[in-house]
Image 1 (cartoon, helix red, strand yellow):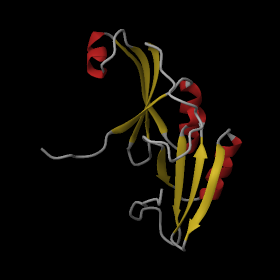
Image 2 (cartoon, rainbow, N blue to C red):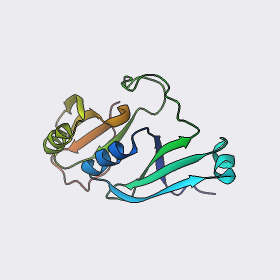
Image 3 (spheres, rainbow, N blue to C red):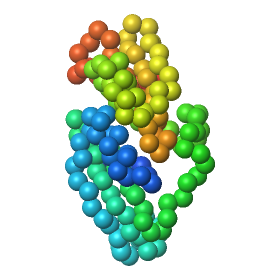
Image 4 (tube, rainbow, N blue to C red):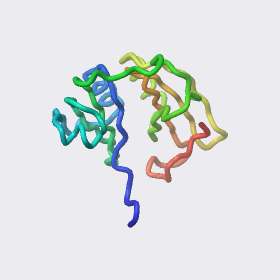
Length: 156
C-alpha cells in the first residue's frame, strides 16, 4: 500500500455561502455541491441523524477543500473564531500565488482581515489573512522565480 496523494481538507462552516464566495474570490472553483444524509453517512463519520450540505472546492492544480454545513446534528463551535495561529490543531491553509499585493488587496475588499505580512530574505513573501468562520489563509509569493517552481515551505 502506498499513499498516492492528499485528496482534500475538510472545513466545517456555519455560513456556507460566505465561505464558498471567499474561496472563489481567492481563486478556487466550486467543483460541486450536494446534500448527504442517512445512516451510512452517520456510520462513516461517527454521528447520528446526519444531514449536511457539502461543497467541494478545487485549487487550479486540483487540490481539494471540502466545506461542510451540518444541518443535523448542529455543528459545535469550539472556542472563538479568531484563535491565534499557535492554537493546537490545523490552523491555516497556505497557497502559492503570483502577485501577493494584488490578491491581498482584492481579498481585503471582500472582507478578509490582514493578519500580517513579511518577506523572507530574497526568496519569498508571506501574508496571513483571516476569512469567514475565522479561517486562516497563508499566501506565499516566490520572488525571482516563475510560479511553477517547487512548493514553498512556510516558517510557521
